[in-house]
Image (cartoon, rainbow, N blue to C red; front, side):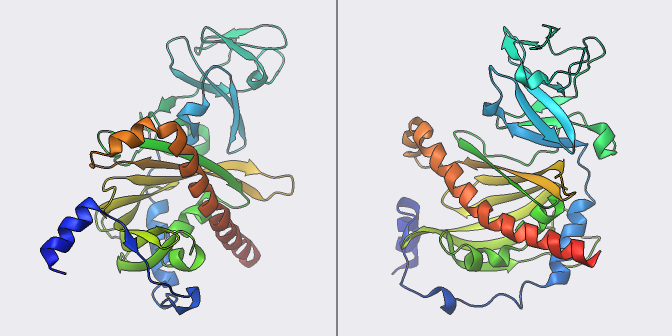
Length: 334
């Protein structure tokens, strides 16, 4: 086919029909996935500042009822004040310790279910809120006594697509540490082998070196991959970056949905009863397209977003097995 015609067709019809092929016939990637390279990328990610910010939940999950969450062993309650502002603070009532997440919210005021003490989001009876931030997709809390870093006014957020977009947030919890979640995504070579139901024809085009002093601009993986449903595939080129220690971002830089991002955030929950660390994977998929037909997708967002959440959760059910295995091996060595 003439190259110009092929390019024109790709812009109007981004799908491709995959030839039938066996999973075992794809090219092995174990020689490319060098442990030293992955470990170096992980070290660099963990050296970046976080400002002590942690993802709490999807913004949409915090509404007219209080939400109880735990971050790094700290029990929190989150709700929205009268003007819709996100409020996050200790879940223990300063009066007699009631769980405020079991209370109710009236006109933006959180009411303790034991004795009716009211909280409007400001200091009350020695109770004080933590710094909180709502970026429109995710809700964050800043815990300086946990992070121990120099605090920042807002979370260190990756760039998100401008203009019309559809966002969906999925959450799964696993028995590992946040670093294991990040390590999983810093190994893009496993994608087509471990997730053949979603990815095929995966090739890592460029990978960062093992240099610990590598600049943040050069610290990225560039991957060519096809997302597929059955034999229908959408080829794209994506980059993987780590803007802060508990976040890894996949951004489509060429192909259908250019500018769309998948943000994977790893939030420590605390230890289970047996001492095993627990981590929440909170993944935000933010889809964008310049195609005129994307306006129809926006109108269908309530129908589309559950499928987006399901796809993200399916991937992470597998990848948490991977992350938990990394933690188990490290725990044995130590």
